[in-house]
Image (cartoon, rainbow, N blue to C red; front, top):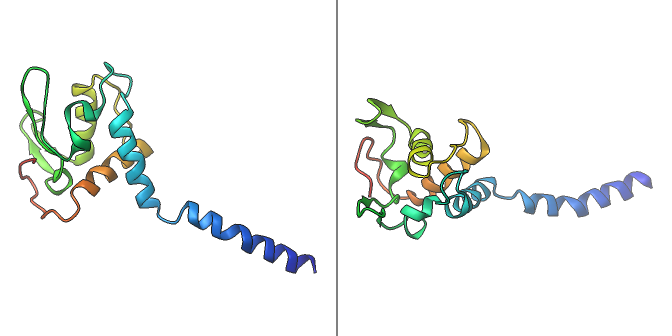
Length: 138
């Protein structure tokens, strides 16, 4: 009898647990979108969205008037050669560089949940775009 009650109780709790983690990838994308819009990474009060307008979906502009490309194809163009770095960089390298340089913040560590979430969000923005390794942003 105790076994039957335990199995029934476990079965009642299981769907709620499954619903919570039904789509871990979508959860990572949502966390990444939240970080993109709200986290300053300890920098100068700016977020990724301060420069990358519309959640990164449209081109933006920095205070001095410089153009910031859309991130709609960001994941589709990496890895790519960076003349500034003098080497081939990954999407994660680019994210960390933007946070350190553009925001003046402390970038998330390689392999961290935050970096994975940001990369997941940018990959979501690139969904359906043709792969153009080494291509131009926008």
